[in-house]
Length: 165
Image (cartoon, rainbow, N blue to C red):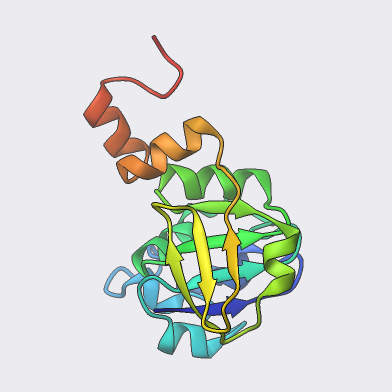
């Protein structure tokens, strides 16, 4: 069972992890503990592995802070579904192995705090109310990287980047 954490539009990387919580500023702390620590403190305290973030447009905008994505990876977020993503956030998340899906319909159909079952293998998200939502296909290169656990794992397994001969 996973929980939905719903956010609005234009959630920037400083909301995901404020700069003062950056790993290089707090080397003794896990950056996962700072995920949404100010924008949504209950996430930092209660988000569980497999939980799903849903958001409106432009999720992950702002600076290219890879540690914001790393915080979500370490929290073991199951997936992020948004109307749209900031380009650099999208690539950083794929590179770190977080499944991302763009779907206005799915975001609009889900409520904050709703319990769901995330089935990435069959590309489904099911609500306890009986709705089954089909996750859109990720681009092939992104799916390959995410399935491998991130770009570093992909290269270790395949000796190349996706799309290279």
